[in-house]
Amino acid sequence: MKNQNSYRIGKTYISATTPADAQSRIEQAAISGQGGYVCVSNMRTVVYANKHNDYRAVMDNAFMCLPDGMPLVWMAKLWGLKSVHRTTGPDFMVAMLNDTTKDLKHFLLGDTEETLSALKSRYSQSSIVGTYSPAFCEVDEFDYEDIAQRIRESNADVVWVALRAPKQDFFAARLFEYLPDKVLIGVGAAFRFALGEIKHPNKMVQKMGLTGLIWRKNKLGTLWNTIVRTMYLCKYGIGIMWARLLGKN
Image (cartoon, rainbow, N blue to C red; front, side):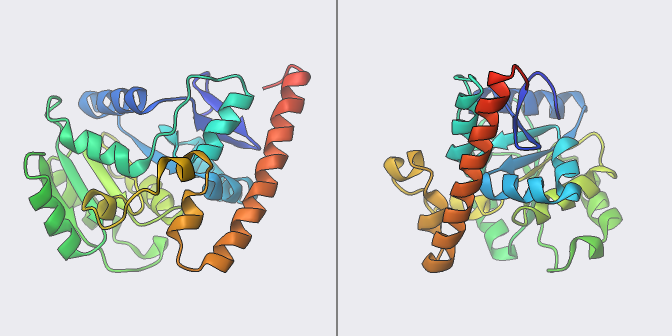
């Protein structure tokens, strides 16, 4: 994924994109059969990728890594990339499901049968051609051949994976080996967002990069995690400014 359309945060690369640009590129990859898997990234996953080589390799080999969190947009600004905009997984998924002009077929994978059924009813105008709620298990325990066969039989172009990062990204990377002509996108809790069960906090909270703190029930633990990620944010930000000063990228 490291290319002229990406920027670096620590050792991790994020796509320099906007919601409209990302949707266009992903739709083209699905229509053409180019395929690829997409990571929807935030500060938590960036910190994780910088600490874990296996997950960083997953991100490096992704078709795109979308800047879901506002801190990732701030890092783009430090690189001088003013056109990068936050591209959230839930909003991105809803936009693609509502866009029926491309005639793309969608497959929903993850969450519960009840949630999947409700989504099919809510977005009946969209081409949702298949759903599957797998049993909870570790990444290495899924029957990837069986899941891939379900998706192939549905003739889906885009597969939405709701297993929460980083698990969903490891899963998508593995499943992509069986479905090289499909686009697989890990979107976490986006299914519940699409149903209105979870909502974005107000715009001020989002702009301040505090969305995760508002969502989590364990406020004390989440506050500590936010403090730690803020420290990493400062570290990465200083690294970017130093790299620019030295003329590096």
